[in-house]
Image 1 (cartoon, rainbow, N blue to C red):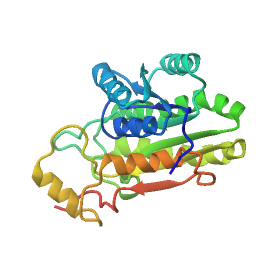
Image 2 (cartoon, helix red, strand yellow):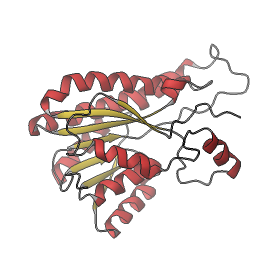
Image 3 (cartoon, helix red, strand yellow):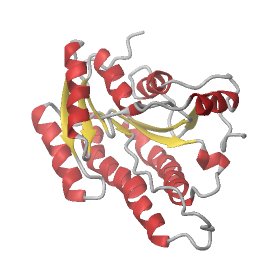
Amino acid sequence: MDLGLDGRTVLVTGASSGIGRVTAAVFAAEGARVAVGYNVNESNAKATVAAIEEAGGTALPVQLDLGDEESITAAVRRIGDLWSPIEVLVNNAVEWPGFPAAGELFETGPAQRVRRSLRANLEGPYLLSRAVVAGMRRAGWGRIVHVSTGLVEDGMPGSTPYVVAKAGLHGLNRVMSRELAAAGILTNVVMAGFVPADKPIPESILRQAAGAAAIRRVSQAREVADLIAFLCSARNTNVTGQAIRADGHFLTPMPA
């Protein structure tokens, strides 16, 4: 299926590894020019670009810090100057706030951890979306996907900083849809479940994760990436404001 992405300018944040890396490769295979966003892992971002170019695609590593508005503005300007204004944005990057300390309770966890997560995982995607929307509005076409988690719906003990920030993306998505759809800009949330990334995972954890999914196996990054690519494509003409789970109906937290 031709997704109508040939020649489009795409930015995928957090594309140096995991779902972001696979998503960048899927867009490039469709003929898009892909900006591979990263914060600190430059070598992995360059490896993603090299793999895309080896496969015949076009890509560029772009450093940006989602906690720094000037960094966001500079990255968006650089991409636009080199190629064209960004037409597709995938807000995939995430800063994991860490697990609670032993004995930590909901009421004793440091509030600063929530504030930091809100800045990186909610304010950053909001500012980046703001930075690209003007160009999309002028073009009369744009697509944005925020990558989230089923924990927003299911909850998990000890995950307050992460889940609160991701839940904010869902609210942001609904508002953006109502404000931008008439301008030809469609925006959605994709909730990924347990997806093996680039590091080895113990077999016992993989079995537990497979048992927690209705499909009785672990979802793969490519399955999430394919959904993101469709939602960001010309083939998607009316799906907007939605939060879609791409996790094989995964139960979180995983049953023991």
